[in-house]
Image 1: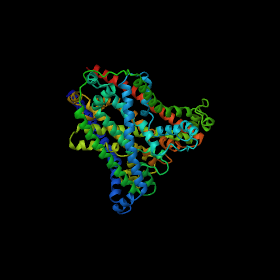
Image 2 (image 1 turned 30 degrees about the horizontal axis):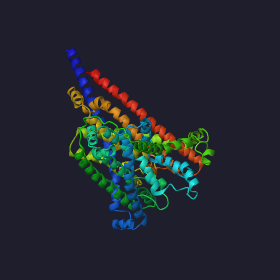
Image 3 (image 1 turned 180 degrees about the vertical axis):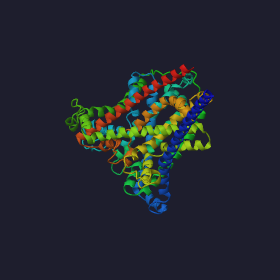
Image 4 (image 1 turned 90 degrees about the vertical axis):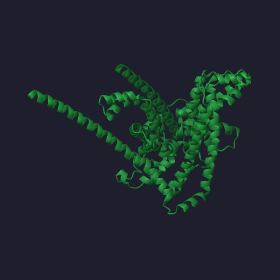
Length: 590
């Protein structure tokens, strides 16, 4: 009898453990879900609603009067005009350079492709405010190009590199990363038999590419145009740093209106910019779908680079290829040289005056100079894990509960992807500049935490996009087998799904780090003395004439680029290692 009671007690104890364990899992899952829901509502929806409320019910009291005052301003109309001009010209120049570089690497036989690949890939790790700083060092006052031009043209002013031409040049050579990443693989997938058929009909290589290859690449070209379009319309760092005279663009103007105490006008201008971006996005997606109907082709023969036999054509190809490489690399090379040059050499306008580490010693030895680096690292350490956690949890929830409601919910996660960064920052300033019930009555503007919270918001679209794609590739049979063994949903996710997501999460963490470590647009509007990040520090030093500060600025850029490249390479190795572990574990399980 006692043995039966003992066995019954043991079984009851095991049942109780299972019940407590499942209850703990449910509690953790519900806690995670509610925390994610609170964050999304508080920091994604509420700021955007605050901007719309400021437009409909402005602080001035009359929305019509605000609109009339806004569009009666000559400065506002000039900013809109300049934004449209820069965007239109950038679409042409970026597309021309990006497509040309992609074709040089993939469509033609040319020597030195390894060097050209590295040169054309520079925008992937040398962008945003770091790139603008590099271009200022080359073409700005005291830069080698400026000094050379002033010897030929003595009347050339020091600040000639500013305004619309300067912004367009920076856009042209910093927005080609989309073509490098996406257009090159598309060229490789082209059916080469179509090119051969065109050649057999008497077409020379260039007309064959224009009339046969380009139509096949239309969807990818349109997709790249879309990214350039969004980037140019919402451009902030380049016009804010290189703006000169009466030139400005809509993004920097929104910041100016906010600092002047006119959030109503800033909100209206920001909403109009967002509507223009979304409208152009819808048009581009429609054009992309139409292009896909006429460009679908199955590759039956691998694409083979064409050898240019004409001497003049071959010389032109090499001249264009290496000229583009030089323009891409010049800001990086000059910045690196100046970072390792002594102050006297910088003061005398010399590109090289001997090797020194004084600039880096200044950065790490001065508490004021090293603070932006530490702040940016700390902000990334806080924001990236939170973004990964929220994005993964929400993606898993949407994947498990598919329907019209969750599809609509998923679309809202991409709002920060299409909204200009300046509008996101404006929403934070409007809503969290006063106590709010969802933040426990705390005022976030002026606090340390406002920046990492904003970073999480702008990182969410990237996390959700890649995690959703990774979840689509997970074999559902594994989850069904675990369910048949009695494992509940949170346990199945922790033990089966999450390990498979780790390689993707590592790569996304690297992308997120590079996006936020030198982030400028949101940071320059929300930072304070407690959290001044690296991007803001570089932007402030970009056009400084002080040789000592020039050395610090270039040291910042070098450190930013080296750290960004190191994070990408480390993440790539870690992702590959984790992938091998997962594959090995699955093989062992079988």
